Image 1: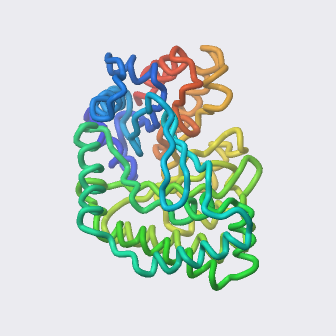
Image 2: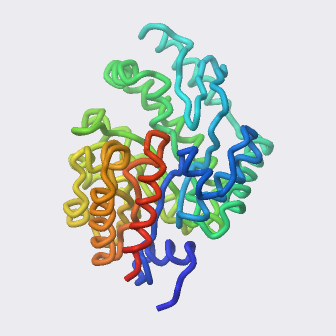
Length: 356
């Protein structure tokens, strides 16, 4: 059997074809691991560190997404009235332009007016295009999943806070749906203008809708406001010849049938500590759906023994080899709380067992 490149390997898996080995995917967001696999020290300079991070990814990953570099020091930024704290590999909101539900509703109405006038500039689109293409260029044969269509659900509820978001849906369906439609329209516009199946044959839609025991929002809300829009976006990508991976952390068993019904080609991260047992999920999903996961990164990778990590890797890889439609991955990301030696063991055992 041919020794496929990473890109060929991933595309064959998504096409349901036989491959010479199991593929892997992950987010490499661990300083020590980046420096170990790249052979270079991070410098605290965004341009240079991007090259170092992508070099490390290229060495150990067949596929990744959302390439970031760690910030040397935390910084705060004000963006559209929100204050965000940027630290390490991530950011979160520490200040909002409203302080109670009444002022939140007023803010939503203003946001609707803003969104109704929104048109993407060529400068904005060009910047996004350049960013995606530059990162894929640096990654070489490692597949970068295109993520320009995500955020239309997660971003509004993150900005709102879950209570305000849920209250608005309950109190004013019309305002809520109009606001969400406009956010969704933004992402559709970006997809229509930038998604390129030749350069980026796989898209990633990350919209968290669940926690450890079930969905964050009621089934009624998700059925009315989330899944119809998700299906529209999946269909749009498919018209462009692009496969789609849907991501949500948490326990998705309650809505697994609805996710399948959208036509998504893949599901990530099949979180084991949230009750997403890989063998059971594989049985419930159609053969066409590629499962990406599910080595636990909350307990096993940070605290597990060498033997426990080997057993966890082997179990997933053996199932992948027998079914042909599983891509090995951690259950979220390889973060800074995972000891370097555990990450090294994970990749060593993956290489040991991945060949068919």
